[in-house]
Length: 448
Ligand SMILES: Cc1ncc(COP(=O)(O)O)c(C=O)c1O
Image 1 (cartoon, rainbow, N blue to C red):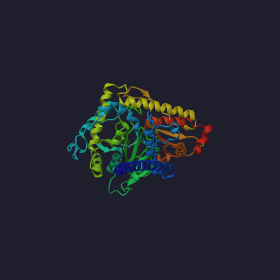
Image 2 (image 1 turned 180 degrees about the horizontal axis):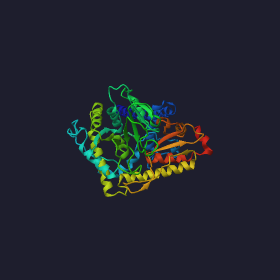
Image 3 (image 1 turned 90 degrees about the horizontal axis):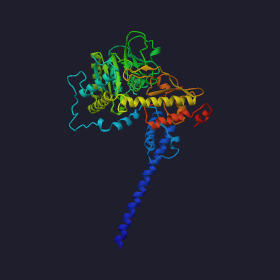
Image 4 (image 1 turned 45 degrees about the vertical axis):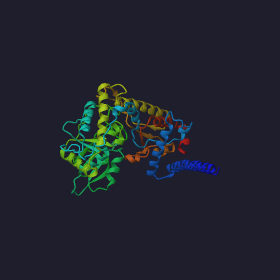
């Protein structure tokens, strides 16, 4: 009897302790969540951004269409984070592709630092080079003949490699770095991050008048406003760097193969694989390419071979699908093109209905890749808030829409950049929320 009681008691204690632990963990979870929500409202910028991203992730996972944990009316309170250009809209395409894009890398593979010791870019995987050349040829968006390929850990690393390669140590003045406003917000941040004596951010290329050597960054189509661009500085002593992150047929008509001395591309906006961290540069001048390679050698001793092999496979799937079926959803570019058409149509309709915002207008062009005549449909919406809204980013934040203020892009706070590359549910909710903000209910939306 005693032993039965002691077993009973021990079991009871175990159950009790388990229950206490579970309830403690749950409570801890809720508390953490509440604290994060408080910080989201009142904390400093960077932390608020990180937390809101976290919260956005949570929201996505709890509001997917079939989730039993979705509560009615929850969307009303959901924070929509469209600050970063995180290309999660591509997930659906790659889920559909399935195993065709799967790569298996055995344990013994990718051991060595070296990929191709005979190549100027000795860490470039030959299969990756082969597949990216094939894709450029199919799409017709860049001249690849007589170019050196330099692979980078994202185009972000390549940008830094370019700065290193073009700067001349030993000269008195740092080389000026400029780009026409509105410019990609990372350019000033990266250029100034090390407070280098080799190069210096000098801001808007349109008002640049300083003497001496300079680098002009030409982003086309442009991030944030989506316009196709040319260089604007009208004087000698400059080197142009063309950032073609968005020169792909889902975003803009491919009118001719780009043919410049230094061209940067990124996997993140081509196929959506931002997390693989792969970018590549097509560089005409051997010495510049060599110095870029040197920088990457110093910075990270090359670029992940695993990522390059995976990128090669992804490119192969894209190219194969382009060659076999250009006009079906089997093609990445068709999938993304149609999604962008739908998103821009819905957004423009919402902006019209609201009357409180405006968007850039684009002229249509003939895409030589698809044979279609269409207007650019950029990855970002460059939204302007109309009066009396002065600070567009704060206004939208008070409506639980996180965006990036025009001030980060060298212009005023009446503009914001909004990512249109997010998952469907976030974009749909954002468009719906925007369309419900109108002049007659504006003050209701201002004070939340
Ligand atoms: C114009 C432009 N260049 C470069 C990058 C960076 O690309 P990556 O993810 O390859 O570093 C981005 C990313 O948003 C971009 O918009």
